[in-house]
Every structure is written in structure tokens, then in C-alpha cells.
Length: 171
Image (cartoon, rainbow, N blue to C red):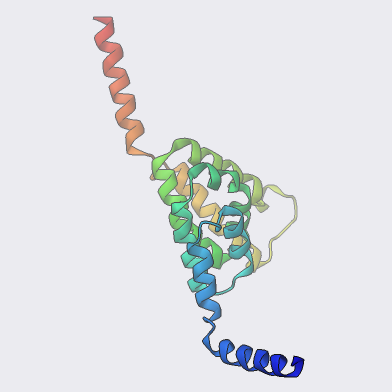
């Protein structure tokens, strides 16, 4: 009886192996599940080298609560600076959040500044070209934020409303 059950088990596992979804399908199911949180997104950003997966995760980050993303902002900035492929996936999120929130912009600039080695301030250290190219992504984003091109428009409206309210109260 045990030989018949083991043979039926092996035939079942052989036939069901053909019916299993592909690896990509399982990964997509994970990414779309409630279990997929920001910590897993960071892990898959770091481990995956596939542009489609990185792009999907970059877009998926938009659906996470902002406080969850901000908790992992140091890790995201480190990945952004050190991995060009990941930077391409994270860039749209960073730009969007900078346009929405001044505090996020300030945190991002502070972290970009902290994680980027400023080679011009070191004595004789000359960066390797690959290192300089990687660091330039963070440098360009930092300069874009500091140029105020990404300044939220709502802040301007709020500031104008506040000034108008102050003037009205003075009269």
C-alpha cells in the first residue's frame, strides 16, 4: 500500500509541477498582496537586477503610506546613490514627493548630502570615474531640489493666503 501511495504521490507531483505558475507570476502575486510592505520593497529593490521588477516596485512605492516610505528614506537614498538602475526606478517617486512636500525635500537633500561623498572638499582624493558617475545622480537630484524647481505650489498658495489674512487682521 505504501508503494502505491508513493507512486501516486510522485505522479501527482509530476503532473502538478507542470501546472504551477511561473516564477514571475508568484512574484507579481507577492507584490500585489497585502503582505508586500515597504521592508519587502527595499529587499527586492536591492536584490533584483531586472529592470521590469525595479520599475514595478518604483511604481508600487507610490501606493505605500508616506510615513512608511519616509521611515526607509535613508535606505532608499543609499540605493539611489549607489545603484543607477534603482535610481531610475526611485527618481519619479522622489520628484513627485518633493513637489508635494517641503519637509520631504529637506529630508531628501539632507540625506543626499550626507550619503554623497563630496570629493571636491577632500584633499587629494580623486574619485574613480564610475564612482563619480554614480554620485552624480544624487548630486543632480540635490541640485534640482535646491534650485526650487520642485517647490510645491501649495506652499506658495498657503503663504499668500497667510499674508492676506495677516494684512486683513491689521486693518
